[in-house]
Image (cartoon, rainbow over all chains, first blue to last red; front, side, top):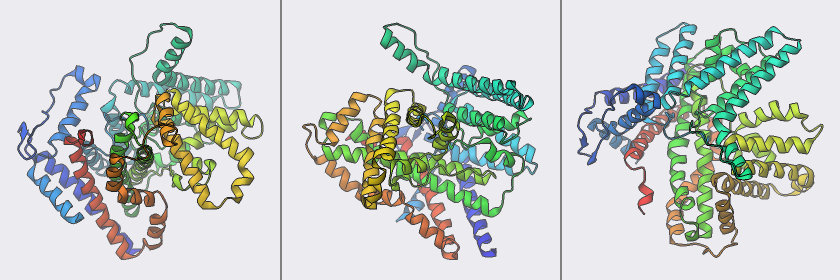
Length: 89
Length: 471
C-alpha cells in the first residue's frame, strides 16, 4: 500500500505540474507578434470584446482560435515539443 | 456524439487542457467545504456550456427548473394520481424541448415533402448536449416517481447533476441515483485521483492519437467522389471510420470517467470493448451502455419488454435509438437495421449461432457493425447505397488502386495497433501486473508522454487542419 501510494503521489505530481507549467508558459509567452516567424504565418489576434459577439458565441469561438493559434508562439513550447519528440524516439 | 461540434470546448482542446482545467483544479482544491466545491463545479460547468452556447444555456436552465418542480410534485403527491400527472407533464415537457430544438426541422421537412406545403424552417440551431441532458433529467424524474431516489430539494444540486461538465456534452448518460450520494459526500483520495489521471489520459490518447488520425484517413475515402473509389479503398475508409467512431466516443467517455474520479464522482462504464462482441445483442451490451440501458429501463420494459408485443417493443426502441443519434432518416434506418438484426438473431439464428465457431461469430458481428456505420455515416441514403454497392463489388469500380495501396501501407501498423486496442488484451495484462513497481513507474512515464505528444498533435492540428486535402 505504502509503495503504491507513493507512486500515485508521483503520478499526480507529474501530471499536475505538466498541466500548470505548460499553462503558465503559455500565459507568459509573447503573444503580440502578429506573424509567427517560426511557422511563417499570420496569427489570430486577441478578439475584441462586444456583448453582441458574446451572446452569439462568436467571442468564445474567436478566443479559442486565438488561444490555439498563439499557443505555439513561445519558443519554449517548441523546445518542449522537441523534447517530447526526442523522448518518443 | 453526433452533436459534438468543433466549435465547442471539448476535453481534447488546448484551451480546456491549459486554461479551463487548471483553473478548475485550483478553485476546487483550495476549498475544503463540499457545498462551496459544488458551487465551484457548477459555475465552471455553466461556463463550459456557455462557451459554445451562450444563448442555449437558458434552454438548459429552463429544463432543469421545470423538472425540479415537477419532481417535487411527484414526491409530494406520492400515491396519488397527481403524482403520475406530474411525471407525465415533466416527460412531455422534456420531449417537447427535444422536439422543438432537435427535431423541428426534420419534422417540418417531412411534412413539406409529403404534403407539398411550405412551412418555414427554424434557424435556432441545436443546443449542444440536449439529447444527453434531457435523457438524464427524464431518468431523474422517473426514478423519483418509482421511489428509487428522493427528490432533490436544492435546485443548484439538481442543476449540478444535469450540467456537470464531465458528462454534459457527450455522455455517459449518468443517472441521478448513481451520483446523488456523491453530490453531498465525496471522498477524494490520492489513489483515486491518480487513477482518474490514468483514465483521463487513456481517453486523451484514444481521441487525439487514434481517433483523429483514423478520421483523417477515413475522410479521404468517404468524402470524395465515389466513382473514383476502389473496392478495397471503400473498405479501408469505412474501417477507418469504424476505428474513429469507437475511439472518439469511448475516448470521450474515458475522459469523462477520469475527470469524475479526480473530482470524486463515480460514473459507470460506457463501453466494454464492443468490437469483440459475438452477436448483435452482445454488441449493444458493450456499446454506449448508458444509452442502451436508458432505452431498456425507460422505454422497453415499461412497454412490456419481451412479455407482450415483443416485436413491436424492439422496433420502437431501435427506431428511437436511431432517431436519438440525429434528426435524419439514415439514423432511423441505422436503428431499425439493428432492431431487425436483433429479432432475426433471437428468433431465427439462436440455435445456429450456438454451433458456429467463435472466430466466425466475431467476423459476422464486425461486418454487421461496419455495414451499420455506412448507414450511420452517410446522411444521404442514396450515397450510402452506392457506397455499399462498391464495397460488395456490385459496381464497376476497380478492386484496388494506387491511393488504396499508399494509404494501406502507410497505416498497416496503425491498423494493427488500433485492432489490438479494441480488445481487452492490453488491459488484462495491465490489470495483472499493475501493482508491480515497475509497471506503476511505467504508467507515470507513459502518462507524461501521452499528455505531451497529444499537446504536440493538437498544436499541429491548429495550423495544419487540411493536410490530407492537399493531395
